[in-house]
Length: 438
Ligand SMILES: *[C@@H]1O[C@H](CO)[C@@H](O)[C@H](O)[C@H]1NC(C)=O
Ligand SMILES: *[C@@H]1O[C@H](CO)[C@@H](O)[C@H](O)[C@H]1NC(C)=O
Ligand SMILES: *[C@@H]1O[C@H](CO)[C@@H](O)[C@H](O)[C@H]1NC(C)=O
Ligand SMILES: *[C@@H]1O[C@H](CO)[C@@H](O)[C@H](O)[C@H]1NC(C)=O
Ligand SMILES: *[C@@H]1O[C@H](CO)[C@@H](O)[C@H](O)[C@H]1NC(C)=O
Ligand SMILES: *[C@@H]1O[C@H](CO)[C@@H](O)[C@H](O)[C@H]1NC(C)=O
Ligand SMILES: *[C@@H]1O[C@H](CO)[C@@H](O)[C@H](O)[C@H]1NC(C)=O
Ligand SMILES: *[C@@H]1O[C@H](CO)[C@@H](O)[C@H](O)[C@H]1NC(C)=O
Image 1 (cartoon, helix red, strand yellow):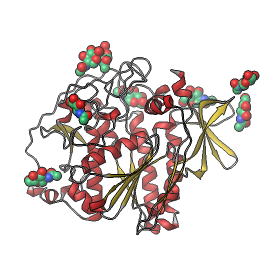
Image 2 (spheres, protein in one colour):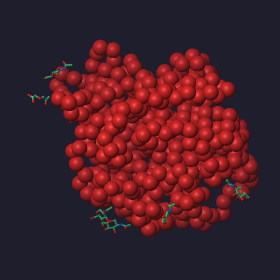
Image 3 (cartoon, protein in one colour):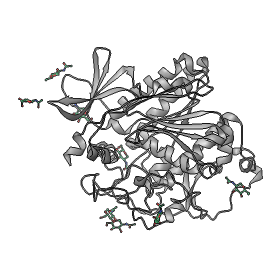
Image 4 (cartoon, rainbow, N blue to C red):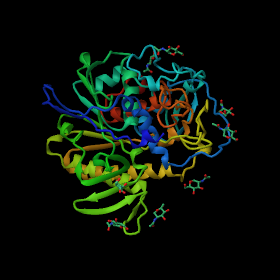
């Protein structure tokens, strides 16, 4: 397996120079990578994360399912409860309405997330919806979403899980309008889509760490060890910032490996290197430092007035009975309950660090006319243990290995866009018809 982890990927650079009236010019600096590597990118991205990451769920007892038949939404006494309630504290309840889209309605659905095509038989995991404690969360409404983002550009900035999120949004939006592909790099890492009828541009800008970072090459071989620079940004996303209205930022999954963190000429510390003379950093500390640098950069960006930044919190994985390379699996067919998740576990600890950084940036942002919001998926997805591809993915190059990191489409990840819609509604005040009835 080692070739998958020692492979060295050169990221493409996508720069979208554009004024608000919309001319676009792409400057693509790419390097060819061998065909095999191309095909195994997904695998590498998933699995090198798990070299060190522990199994979060050793033998969880089956929880009592909370079954609630759908009596949805028309609860007039709760006027606009959604505008005030904590959307992210809740539980999964039965909802037999199922998914809004299918693998045939969504033509952009990536192979590796098309779990049904790759043999997943159980469909019951689609019959749940997220129920916040204090209100109902309206389902994604593509019409209303388009209304809120008409004329805007939205960029997902992050790794393959950020792309998973964007792919879910593409499927949901394509119920209303088919996206037009404007740009795609050879590794499907950077993409731009346009919805002409709504003049909405959606893109993913690939960034593992948000700040500049490169893999150490030792004797011509990639080492799996990275150097990060807190004083330099990852220029795959920053040049685009002035053209972007909504930046949806996440970082996390690439931090579970040996990483040396530098600031100017100084070594600040390192993650998983365990050297006597170097400060030991936790994964969370490194995630927090880099997120802080990224959010400070946005606050300090003169050309980015009015940008709304939304940080998506840590998305947990669910390898059971082993780690990714020791037979770990994820074949659950229903979600976990609140009582099954560890509220003081490492996933929520990472989430808390991210939330803290967003609060800090938000405070600083008040004087820069910048807004910061959180799409806090961690608790919902800790319970969403039934939503991973497991063995049902396009795993030609890693047969038998389970993907318990990414999420099936359709699946519980679609709730991230229910959250996103609710956050935008709070921001824009454009509330969908159905929502105003809640
Ligand atoms: C959709 O999933 C079904 C299995 O449920 C599969 O037979 C079919 O090939 C898939 N269609 C597409 C377009 O992926
Ligand atoms: C809004 O409500 C109408 C009528 O109740 C329903 O047909 C439609 O599916 C709802 N839309 C969403 C996005 O829930
Ligand atoms: C690099 O290669 C040389 C010669 O093969 C070897 O002596 C040296 O130990 C290698 N260095 C590392 C860090 O592996
Ligand atoms: C660094 O942290 C790791 C894990 O927390 C621990 O095992 C190790 O002993 C620490 N190393 C030093 C030099 O403190
Ligand atoms: C720490 O020690 C190792 C060898 O023990 C050395 O290679 C490295 O340069 C030292 N790092 C710093 C920052 O002093
Ligand atoms: C993990 O092991 C337990 C106990 O042996 C078993 O009940 C459970 O089904 C296993 N889970 C998976 C995903 O293999
Ligand atoms: C998951 O896999 C384990 C091991 O193969 C099996 O014992 C268990 O019944 C499976 N669980 C489900 C829900 O299929
Ligand atoms: C929850 O996670 C913490 C931190 O990893 C750990 O110390 C504790 O034992 C876990 N609790 C349970 C019930 O698993």
